[in-house]
Image (cartoon, rainbow, N blue to C red; front, side, top):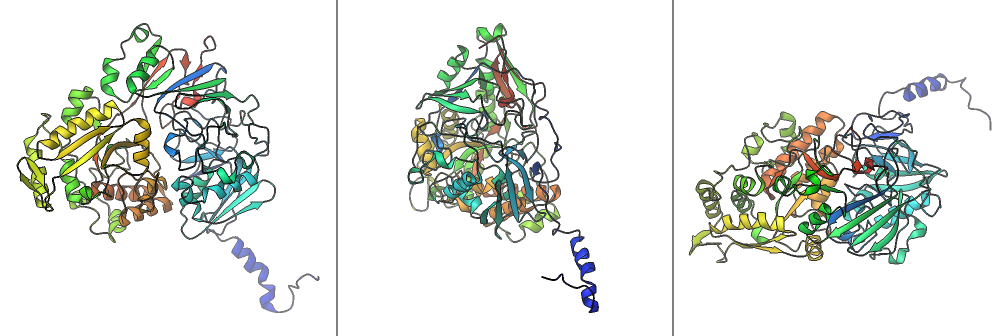
Length: 617
């Protein structure tokens, strides 16, 4: 074929100049380039040639057996299915404390940045300015623990399983519903091309997906729970399983990624044992005896009163506090708005007045807690105490009823009692609000317009939750509200939580510096009726959905903070929970032979970077 002539008609002679101009356009059409990292906003903190993260010791001693102790039980080793989702063994995948011991993601999230991921199974990532696609190139050295290479076909198998509604955790199905097609590119590349529902966070969410070996699972039985050791690409293999009691991990001596920058200085033990305990007292007694080696303590009363055993006194156990840049998170009594008793926002607001934080904090916790105010307390993302900006008002304008005037003006605060446990002023406000909502106080009971008493059950998981709930129930009873506190075993609790079979429960959400698509699983309409989701309150609010969309599509930090604050106002105004409290710092007790780096990352201590004193096993 002859080359196209550029002589002749004048318009054809201009073609090279036009093409050059198009290619030089400084817009979103610029060609994408593969890179070592991907950040939600801005640039990654670590350069392409970084050697290790700053919060690890790259020369940390290796060896020894770490023993962890956790509360609860387990009966499943498949980490992504709905069945058994609440009772999957710790450490298998996406464990906020212990890391990913067995399964690994395409890219590794850094706990020292708001939301940035670095190469792991994928050595590079590529996307465009519009984030209309993401392409990962697998590391040619990546191997599963049986020695077989990690292939693009394994990524395709994992995503195929994740697309099946009702089989895997809802967030995976939701993310992949925004993908138009998934293609193999060359030998080691996999490209996800997005549809119109995608947002700017989606490339990072897909980068965090685990990769399961196609040869390690049977499609026909994939949805079933299993206790057979599974094959992964992570630093550890499952050595022994004692259902509900113990899981033992053994270091893979041939672990493929031990020298990668994102992994250096971590995974320092030859073995990891995770012991399960059915109650907190037994767990603590086991820690005292040295049956496991680190214990995170979230109860100020216990921190002040029970950590006086001999090993603490003679220095064999060290009590440590760590500062963190993470927001306070969410912890409270969740109203199940699917139940008629909690369908009215005004009723929920009235009941929220009756939790006496000041009394609980002083009498049960030595004044060690701070009251949660909003959903992003202790951070710049919080709307509390800040009037809504013009940009926030513009976002919220289509939803004029979604935010109450006091929240919009930045004047809302959680109620403050006199600390007596029976503050008459707050009780009067609650009674007035309930009467305005159609209730009457008769014969010592709060009676609804339908003639039924205001009654509900508070589901609790452990003795500490029960103690808080009983204090709340006592105050409620003083205004004629009948709240029954029911503590159940862990298996029943998880089953009821997963199927939304409760009126009210106590639950936490970790704080995050980069809230995004996971908020749909907590507060989005898409998860309100999805079994196994974290939408405990049953929230189905168009305003909340729109603010999540704004958060995940923000291109600048300023636009992101604006969207999160507007979202915070929507949730506060919805009265979806009775806010409880948080610690301003992390508290960890450890046996002295467990060591850690001097530098602590932004989100707090990082257990995968700890190590064992070489003189101790």
